[in-house]
Amino acid sequence: MTKPKAHVAPKKVASVQQLTKLLGEYPVIGVVNMEGMPAPQLQRMRLQLKDKLQIFMTRKTLMLRALDGAKKKNPKLAELAPVMKGIPALLVTKENPFSIYKILQKSKSPAAAKAGQIAPRDLTIPAGPTPFSPGPVISEFSQLGIKTGVEGGKVAVKEPKVVVQEGEQIKPNVASMLTRLGIEPMEIGIDVIALLEGDTLYKKDVLAIDENAFLEQLQTAASSAFNLAIEASIPTKDTIEHLLSTCFRNAKAVALEANIPADAVVEELLAKGARQAEALKEHIQT
Image (cartoon, rainbow, N blue to C red; front, side, top):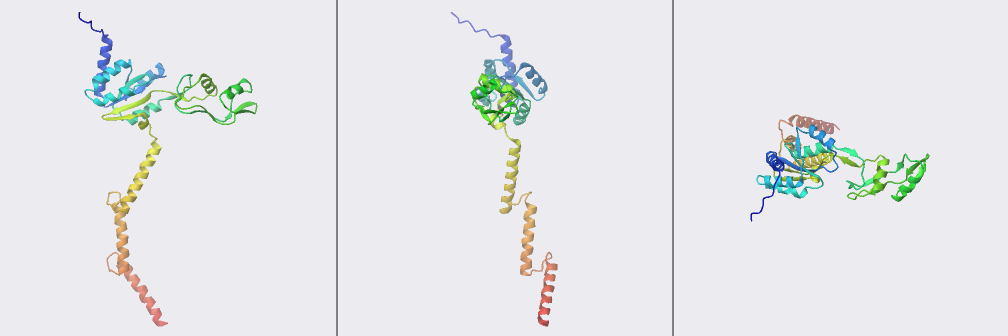
């Protein structure tokens, strides 16, 4: 008996084919996490960024099939499958990976923490006054291990306190307290996990560079390279003027010391001779 073939909806087949085609056309392919991203904001971002990138979001199994089909053209696409997490989507663009990461980071907005979310970093309640009047809230702070007092008729936090460690789940009472204090530690936006350009896979920790620190490092490296080239007398377009100037000064000093009548020192030698003659004349007269 012939085994019946599994029926695949034409819409799903078309979706996979479309995505496979896109993955083969764009030089930069990325995996992003859409978890916690409200649909209205996603629509706005898609419209705002349509000239720079496209985001394709469907069932994970369909995206994996598209990646599998497209990896025949670029085998490195296979490295994107293991990093798909949360609510994944695929991104395609012709822009530089670092530029895209920066654009998506700037498009994020702060949001209140919700119970059950994972803390993106250590979440701290700072020291200082709060808007709360003395009452049951003091006990709530105490349950979180936070020392408080009363200042000016309001509850004040005495010492800053980390209430959730990075990577830990946020508890309901912590989420509630952060919200009431107006602390918005979360971000709403597209979270870039990795971007593939050619044979190079850039993960989030590489893409998230501190531009100011990076610029300082470049400036330090350039200064060190210049000093090394000067010390080693390596002629480059940046050092040649300085090296020639140094050589000229050194040669001039040798010529003056050895009384060599070169064009560059003849006037100084004559002046030097005149001074010596004057000194000798005074010595004879005395």
